[in-house]
Amino acid sequence: MEAELCFWGVRGSLPVGQSQIAAHTSCVELALSPDTSIFFDAGTGIHQAMKKRTLKKLILCLSHFHWDHIQGFPFLEGLYQGEMEIEVISGFRDTFERLSVLFDERFFPVPAEFLKDRIKFKFLETGQKYSVSDSLSLQLAPLNHPGTSYAFRVEGGMSSFVYATDSDYDPVTIEADKLLRQAEYVVMDSQFLVGDSISKAHYGHSSFKRTLDVAAHSRIRNCILFHFDPNYSDEEIFLMEAQAADYLRSVYGAEGPQIILAKEGLKLKVPL
Ligand SMILES: [Zn+2]
Ligand SMILES: [Zn+2]
Image (cartoon, rainbow, N blue to C red; front, side, top):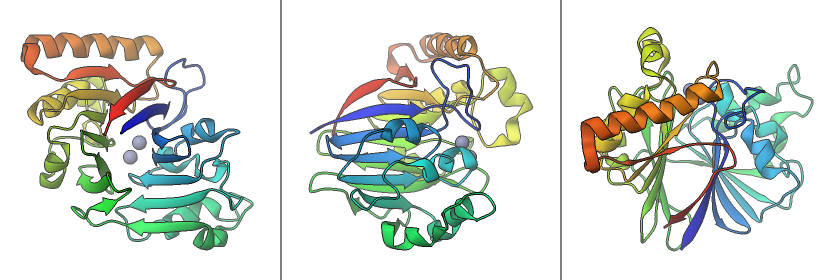
């Protein structure tokens, strides 16, 4: 099959109003058919993604619960009607409790209780395979990030897609190393230009250089740079893309991965 990968939110930490390419926080869609999609994270981008649109089934994989990955969830169109089937998958056992915080009456007018009937919650153990369809499986692995973030791999008969953001890839966990290996398309944390990765070393994110080293080591085909620091202008993000291309050419030559800069509105065909 051929899925379509759509980028709805590619910014890290905070939405940024003036950006043409990275205004919204994390949300990536893997459209399996016109009425079924897997979404990765529910940052503010998910509101754009589902505006005036409905699906038969929406599978939402939540990497972790930092605000930038769940901020858009209460504003997901279709959440308050029953027509669209919604399944939330995560590596945390207490997903409902974590999401409930968003619906605390002090912060939001709708109480969380309705989620119990409305949503099917699925907890996945690391390494456990979950069948999305006859031909597609899903699994996850922990990443090095404060409070842990989980990477997801969708495996089809032809190739694979991995969503692996919010990580300082130094180190890559043993389980994530397996998950990343030889994947065709991988969305990766590329929060920093090199200078900032030194001053913000304890933030739990990576510089594009570290990301490219991991992508090359794991023999990833297409490395998608994602989750940009909210302080960066579009010019600085394009500078990162240029520096990444230079670094890859000088260190890995033709052996390295292809670089793709995540931009809102970008769509890619992914054979699965
Ligand atoms: Zn984040
Ligand atoms: Zn995070």
